[in-house]
Image (tube, rainbow, N blue to C red; front, top):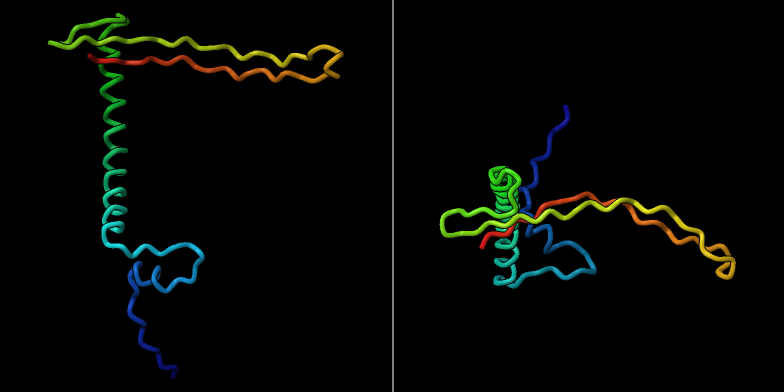
Length: 117
């Protein structure tokens, strides 16, 4: 019968990074490590806040019923619609320029900007 070997204790990620052979710096400064952890935590919160911000923006714009200005208590809400731009086709320019082609631009969709003052 084969004898099983005991498993090696699991290394933490910091242990793995300390022993890694790399050309990149391994950060060990405690203030910098704390800043990295705080950055990661804030990034997750920021993503959730951006999603909620977009939901509220859409809710306010829908509640304005197409009006460009509305009053909400002591605040003034403005909505500006930026029109879509159509795509432009490629154009061939003069013979003097040896048949070079000016590339067209892609179409851009319209969007609304919401400003609350």
